Amino acid sequence: MITQLKEIPNTMVGFRASGEVTREDFDQVVLPAVAELVQRTDELNYLLILDTPLKNFTLSAWIKDALLGLNNLNKWNRCAIVSDSDGINSFTNLFGKVMPGEFKGFKPELLNEAIDWVSGKQEPVFQDEGDSKE
Image 1 (cartoon, rainbow, N blue to C red):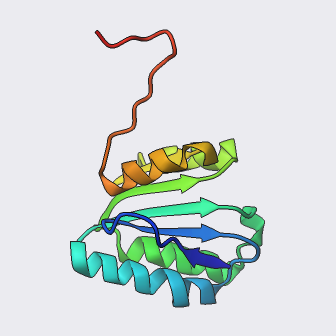
Image 2 (image 1 turned 180 degrees about the vertical axis):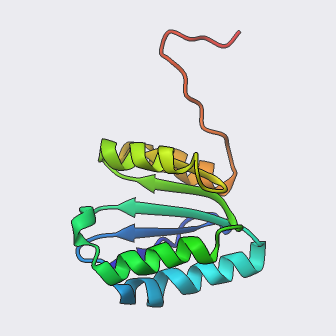
C-alpha cells in the first residue's frame, strides 16, 4: 500500500510504500497528488519512503510508476528515495545522472534532510568528519 505523507511542505508530495504496492495505489493516491502539485507549482518535487522490498511492487504498479515518470518528464525537479538499501540508494543517485531533475537516495535516519532537500529548504551538506568550515 502507498500512503500520502501529510506533514510535509506544500512544495512537494511524499509517500510511504509498505506491504504490497499495486496499480490502485498509484491510481488512487500517487497520481492525483502528483497532478495537483504539478498543476499548482509547474514542477514535481517527490519523496518516496520505501518500507517494503521492491519485490512487493506488482507488475502493474511498476508500469504506473514508469508512466508517472514519463508523463512528467519535463516537470521533475527533485526526487528523494528513502531506503535502508544501499543498492536502491546507489541506483537512485545514478538514475539522476540520466533523468531531468535531481534524484538522490537517503537512508531512513536522514528523512528530515531528505524532506528539506526535496522541498527546497536546504541543499544537502556532505562533509567528512575531519573537514571544517573556516
